[in-house]
Length: 90
Image (cartoon, rainbow, N blue to C red; front, side):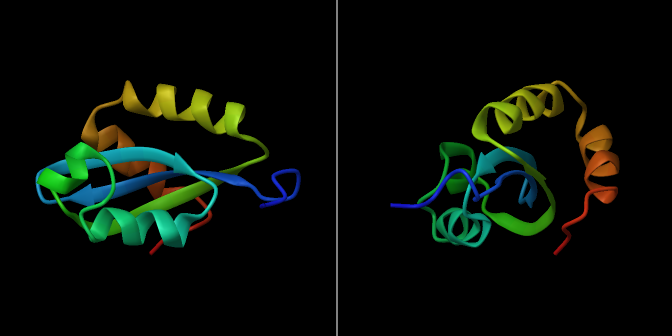
């Protein structure tokens, strides 16, 4: 079992075949591999990811979920600009 007290949650943005995808995870590499293998979200099964545009760490799942909701309200161009300022990039 993973120690969630010390494991950050990440808000991440993927560039996909047609558009962008926003999600959260506590294991970025494993989640990206799942999307790339067609085992992730329905959207990424139909529109495979081309690149991880960025990821931002959060202390817990609740904070990451709130940020995910806010980011999903933005246009794709706004999402890409936001991700450009994140500490983690592909």
